[in-house]
Image (tube, rainbow, N blue to C red; front, top):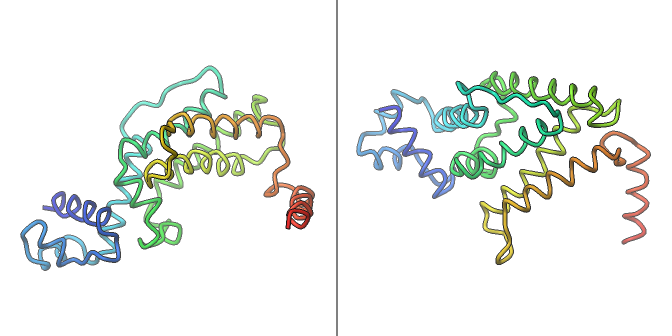
Length: 211
């Protein structure tokens, strides 16, 4: 029953939007009473958080062996390409977790997802190893690398799922190109506003000149 409730909620949240779906609508989909759903999930938010936890487990590949890499740069590519691949394999979870602005904020409820903190910590450790191996300049902040590479592939995933690609444009190629461009920029020691006030000053002067 819990599986049927979650599947119905996920499909309705994605097709109609989280705010437009009530517990009653979910109950109608599975042909049970709202009271049945409340006996499993106290609120609609609890339904969403249960789906988000499932999504994170799918994203992080729990129960599956992790590949080993001789080249730390290849490991960086694989780590972040996996996020884009998740958006293709499980678009309904990706859309609900990362695109729908009407759902409860996951970022304000991290205590519900201890596994996410564990996996992010593992990724930051791997990024730091890549820095130590010389893939990125010494002193690079691993969290900055994480955010930049995640943003690169997220943008391509969002454009594909939201049907914002140009006619004939290849979403996979765009995702690979943005990831590679971000990697090469980081490796070259690009001036990062989030890391250096001097870089931010340069960009501010450029913005004023352009305006």
